[in-house]
Image 1 (cartoon, one colour):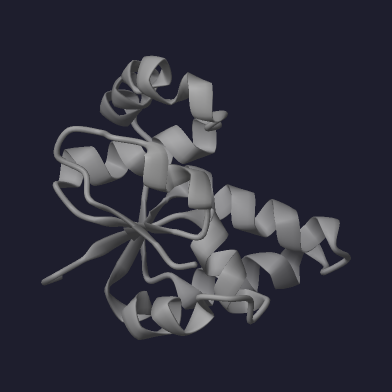
Image 2: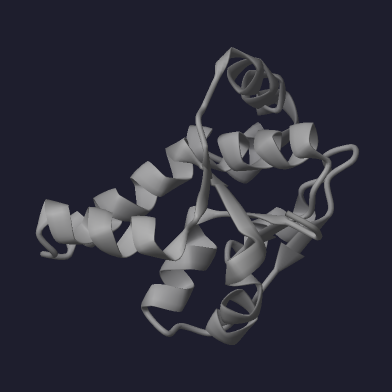
Length: 129
């Protein structure tokens, strides 16, 4: 897939909820990849707001064609990012997303404003709002 981007859970949720920045996500959705960790986050949020689990899964999986399993290499990269991201409060899911972007050498798209303060070598971060 050419010109792929790594999509953070917050960006997909912004699209689903038609929040600020959702048009930017809409434009890149066809070339987006996501970590399975971030897919789990989206499904969890949808289920928490009252959407049936199977429906939350269907909605999410229909939107993201390329879901990348979270493997040992990604786990190690995500762990290595803890030192640089701890002061910003980034979660394991956030680091899984950034780690995937680092490994794939792709830009990452997020709705989390605090990411604009984060600097990860080799990762271009685009904040949609």
